[in-house]
Length: 93
Image (cartoon, rainbow, N blue to C red; front, top):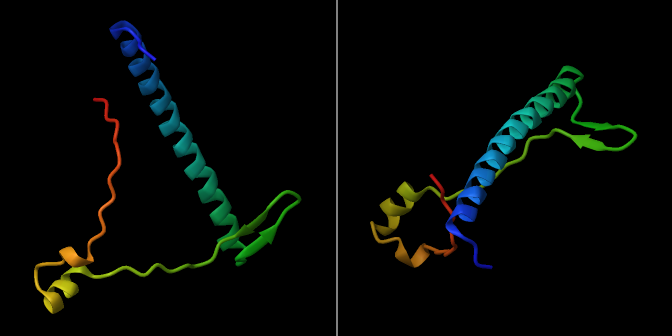
């Protein structure tokens, strides 16, 4: 697909507009999520069922590695433990 520079500019403007709409929608999503969480905590429930949904609000955990403590044990060279992922990124300022 080959487009002209003016068409490219139009696409950039469209992208900016859509990103603005996305940010606004994400704000609205967070507000609704807070209301649902508020309902769950105020009613002291971690699971609720409605006509169309099963809602859970429970703690979960995630385990990570402490890079500083690994450096204390293995030294500064942590290259053997690193995993590198390569991907393309589109940035428009």
